[in-house]
Image (cartoon, rainbow, N blue to C red; front, side, top):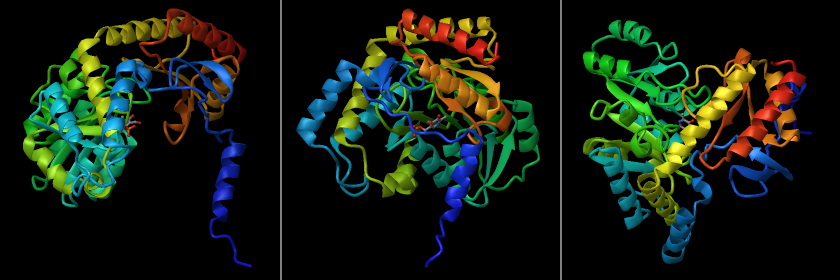
Length: 393
Ligand SMILES: Cc1ncc(COP(=O)(O)O)c(C=O)c1O
C-alpha cells in the first residue's frame, strides 16, 4: 500500500492539540456586527476589524445590490484582459482623491496589495529595511522579490538608521513599516522613518491596513494623521477592515500606479473585484466623508474600553489604536482566556505563536463604533471575572 506522503500533517496537528494551540474555526451564524451569534451563542463581538460597523451599513448594502443588479455578480477576467469596469476606474479615482495622491490602484486584498507591490518594485539586487513586526504580507512580498531583507527592532528609527548607514550605495532600497501594527495596536515610527528615507534616498512605504478609516481626517490614515503628505512614496490601504468590504489599494504617483498595472502580479494574474464590491467600497468612501461621527464614536469607545482594561490590571501593551491586546504570555493561557470569555458571551480571539512571539500570546480585542456602552461594560465585567478566575489580575 502507498505510504501517505502527507502523514507529517497529522503529526503536526497532534502536536498543536497537545500544546493547547489547536483551533476550531469559529463560525458566525449572523452578520458581522458588534452583537452577533457565533457557534450558536449570542456574543459581544470584540474580534472583527469592522471598526465602523460598515459591514451592515444600509448605504453600502444598497449600493452593492444596485451594482449587482446592473452589472452582475462577477467580472470574469483579470483587470488587464477584460476585468476592468468603469466602476473599478471610478473607485481608483475616488481613492486617489481621498488620499491626496496622483493615482491609486486596487488589488483583491490588502495582502495582495502589499505582497504584489513589494515584489514588483524590488529585485534580487535590492534591499528592504523592515520593522520586525510588519505584517506577513510585507514579509512574503519581500521574500518573493528575492531582495535582501534587513529587519530593524520594532519602531526603532536609530536602529534602522544604523542599518541604512552601512548599506552599499548600489541597488534600490525600500524602507517599510505598518501604519498601525495589527497585533499590538501601536503606531509606526512614521515621522522619523520619513526623515531617514529622505536623508538616504530610500523608497518610503507604509501599510495602513488598520489605519484606513480609523486614523487621520475622515479616516485617511496615518500619513494624514502625522501630516506626512508627499513624503510617503507608496501608501497601502485596505478596503477589508474599516471600509467593511474587501480589497486593498496602493496610492501614490501616476508612474507607480501604471508600473503596478504592468508588473503587480496579483493585478495581472487574479480576477478583479465583483462590481458589487467596488460599489460597496465607493459607498464606504462616501460614508467616511459624510458620517465622521462614526470615527468619533469609535475613538470614544476605544478610549473607554482601553482605560477600563488597564484599570482592571490587565497588560494591554503599548496600544494607541482601537486594537487592544490583553497580553498573558503562554499560548495555552491565552486560548483558555479566550475560550472562557466565549462561554460567558464575549468573543475575543486568542492569538499565539507564530502570529506573535511565543511569550507574548494574548487575547486581542477591537471595539467598534457600533458597540454600545452597555455592550462594552458587559465585556469588561466578563473580563474582570474570568481574569480573576484564571489568576491574571
Ligand atoms: C497590517 C496588515 N496589513 C495587511 C493586511 C491584509 O489586509 P487584507 O485583509 O485586506 O488582505 C492585514 C490584515 O490582516 C494587516 O493586519
